[in-house]
Length: 179
Image (cartoon, rainbow, N blue to C red; front, side, top):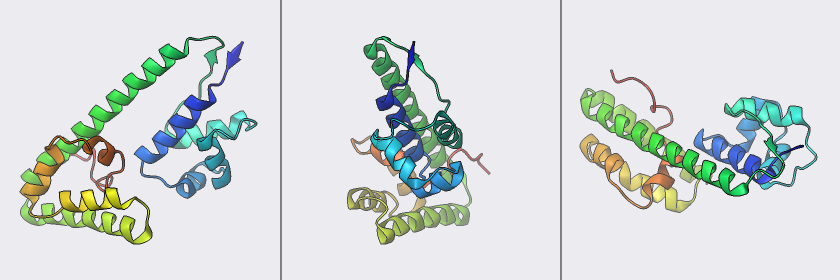
């Protein structure tokens, strides 16, 4: 007997959507599933959803839908989920560290352009109330000043860094090769 762990499905869909800086509307357009269904999946209230719907949402997010054996130890699932989250957190830190190096290596005009683009994203978040003021104010501080300061802010440890890197104004630049 196999069983879908709705809490794990809910968490994975929400986490993947947020990591990709997608709104529920954007995910709905990408997957062909209604925004209401996306919201129901993320809250765990969609327990009668079709497998094809889950598959379309997962595919749009780059996830693979899977079932686990009934009675599988939840502790092992939680441990695996924690390890996967640790890997994702480290990958986000690495991506931002690579971006910091790119900012420092880029010609000044290019670096200023990248920083200006990230600032514009944060301004849009603030204007459209897409993120909390806690996020926008912290990102504004990190993006203030010359490129050296911005690059250093991407490397500095801090209790908010991991949270900030989950919703980053740098999505447009992460993972791109250095010039």
